[in-house]
Image 1 (tube, rainbow, N blue to C red):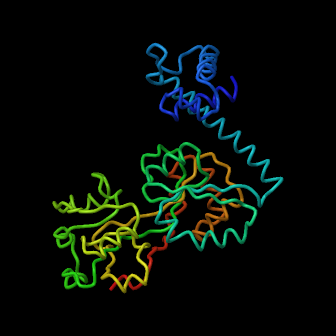
Image 2: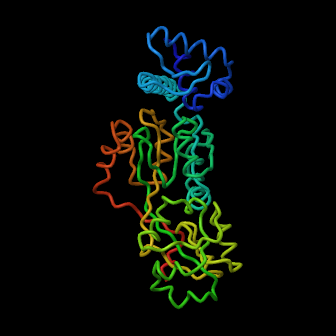
Image 3: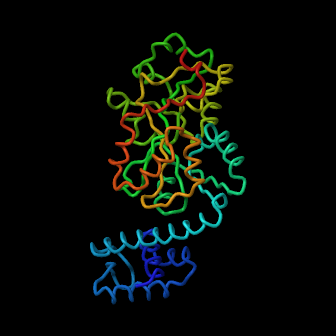
Length: 333
């Protein structure tokens, strides 16, 4: 068995059993991958993949187990390299973070400014995407850290550290008729309005949609976008009432919008840091986490990184009240 064989095995799985894509991502040839997988199966004395002709159609239960340990071995090798790098250059390296447009636009600028002052030799890379894309990036080892809200169905492969809670904000043009109901706004009243909100809120299993469904109502979404600034633009031109994250509502927005917190209508949301279980975090990664969340001390971060399950991680935060993030205190009018 070789690290190369494990690398090719994991690559084939990450590319949904497409050997051609796996070869491209591994900078090798299809025959090269096929040969190494076959040699691995011969050495182990069992099939890893289910085949139909030359095509891979599935993975055997034995193959699932082999892939699990292959990923762990490759992660351990990566950790050893990182450990070596830390000894030679503690304050140098690359920190790659996957996050959403909202986090990058409203939360991270000051954090990144401070971080770059503390670690001028660390190259910081942000990769923006939807929650689904962010989950794929962290699971595929494309990034060191992920920051997002919807981290479900991760099969305990990712450690989640809670950063802060937040609520939606509801906005409307200054002359909108909803003004008289704004201080005691209900989901029933909101359901009567055409709504402008995030594209990721439109799905059937989102907390946004579920809130209406639980009240036997249906949201009348007339426009959806990925970015809060775009939502504000279309609310301002009168397309409908907007529902955005509280962090995206800025104090200057009072000049253009009526606004109220949606905390009495929509459920609380929590934003998390995520990193793969078994990852050896660099010192500057730990510092970045602590900069954004003071309650995530280096001691807690390291203890969480050594945990065996998310349940163990959650126990570390039982007595901690997370801060509530909002763009402007004036939103609670």
